[in-house]
Each structure stands twice: as C-alpha cells, then as structure tokens.
Image (cartoon, rainbow, N blue to C red; front, side, top):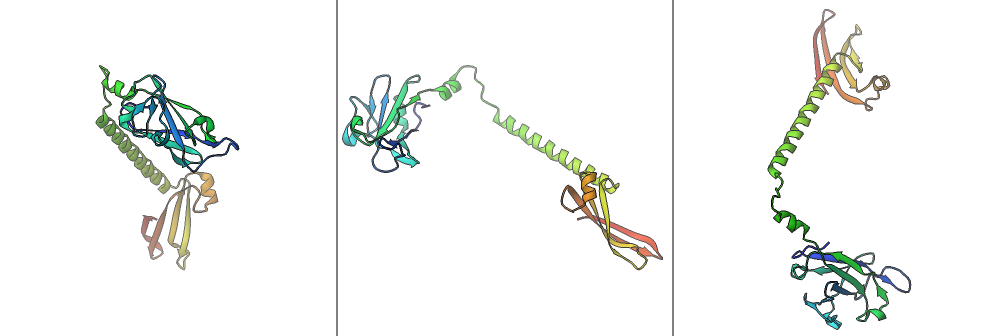
Length: 222
C-alpha cells in the first residue's frame, strides 16, 4: 500500500529468463506507472508520458536474493490519488521485449487510510497516558502478587512442606551444628532432592548447644 506524501520502496523479484534463477547484479531498470492515466515515473522523480528511455528510466537497487527495490520519495507519492493503483516491473533492458531478466508486474494500491482516519469527525485519539498508567498498575499488581506468592511459599517451607533437612556437620553427641533446609515445589521433587529440579529456595542453618541442649538456632536464606 502506498500513502500519498509518504516515501515508499517498491520491491520486485527479478529472475533470469533463461534459467529462472535469481538475478542479483548489474543494471536493472524500474518501470513504474500509474494505472489511472498511464504516466510513468522518470528518474528525476516526475511523472511523464510516454515512458522514459535511457538515463531517464529509474534504476533499482538489489536488496537480497534477487529482490530489487526502487524508492518513491514523498514528492512522487504526493501526486497520487487514493484508490488508484501504481504498477512496477523491472528488467535489464530499455525495451522490455528485449529483456533477458525480468520480474512480474506488481501492483500497489494507493490509500490514505491513516490520514483519513485521523481527520474523520468524531475520531478520538487513544489515551496514551492512560494506557501507560494502566500498564504500570498492572505491572505493579503482578509484582506484588509474585512477592506475596514467594512469601507464602517460604512460610510453608518453614513449616516443613516439601522440604529436605540435611545435617552437614554434627558435634560429638551427633547433634546438628550446621545444615541446609531445601524447599521444593512438589513432594516428588523433594523425594528426588537433586538440589536443582523444582528447588524454590534453600536455608542455611547454624545451631549451638549448652549442656547438650539447643541454645541458638540461626536460619538464613541461601
């Protein structure tokens, strides 16, 4: 689609007639014309009739894999009328009938949809500020919900749900001095206890004793 007074690249896929392979180098002429009156685009960005010849024919630029483009500047598209069509065909010869490489003819509709919509009576532009605020509120709510879920999971873990307590070091009486409490997202993963799959978080535990009785228990999140 072409919007009047807006620059637009027209693309065509150019192939070698003898082989059907992509044509990727050399001079390729771009024949661009208005279907409404048959006027052709000239290399100096004006519309003329009859079709230009020689150096007056616009040339195309290779993009990739046989796809070539010609640019219509804003001044060129400004001469177009919404509803009409612009056609483009690319060849390697000033006389298309003598071409050894060519493209199909590609049609482009001229439309002023964007400009017309903005100018239509009763059209209300989107409330971008309101949308941004709504998105920010949603993001904040999601963050708060996530934080609440994490806090809840930690509380449940400390109650012993789907957790594994490993004693790392013991005193001479076999009492745990240091350990690790690992919380998992399911009983199955707690049974497997590989320290990775389904691990939610872990706690480091340090315990001290006096006269064989627990004196201090420190639990910190790892």
